[in-house]
Length: 61
Image 1 (tube, rainbow, N blue to C red):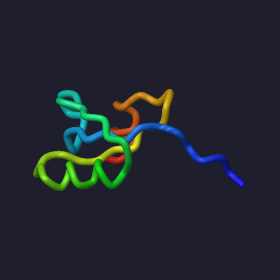
Image 2: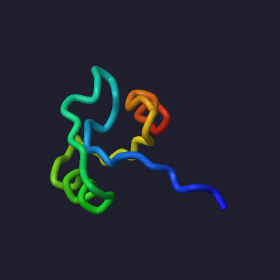
Image 3: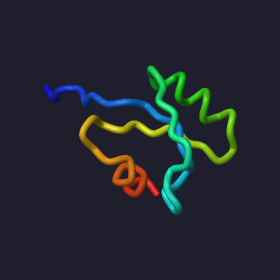
């Protein structure tokens, strides 16, 4: 069985382009999704510990 990935949920811009803009961490996925849904140009991202936010954002664009 695979170990669960540890990391943090953040809300940031929908793409990297000029950088993520303001990045706000959240305690869990539900809180991050709620916050992202309140803003048109924001998205919830799961960033595993030790991984660069830029890499995560570029993988999903």
